[in-house]
Length: 167
Image (cartoon, rainbow, N blue to C red; front, side, top):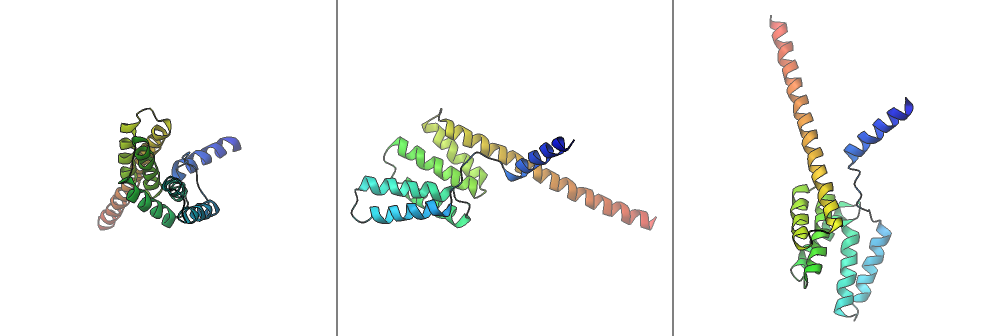
């Protein structure tokens, strides 16, 4: 019986916690990427600068800190204009989609991952992110319906209580 309760608790926690498979990044990795960008800006080739900026962008959008995620989104949006190849554009769109997913902007994330899939329709990572985003949108809809139903129930109970007192 305890095992069944444990599994139920785990599934509820996963449902509300958004148990996705997108990795997280900690502050130490971000700090290392920031040092790498600073070093690359001191005379490194343009290609090395771009690679270090992409690594920093990746780390930022995978952070647990909303300010890091927002910073990563801003960096990626600014660099998307200069995407030289379809592969470069695909990578930036994907990371932007991750950033928007992490910031809770699921519709924008889905839009970006769909643009990414227009470039590479079979890219598993993007397909997985799209499913994760759509699952989250579905969960949010179910939670919204539950909240609405609860509110309607409370209002109906209040009206019923008021009517029964009058009668």
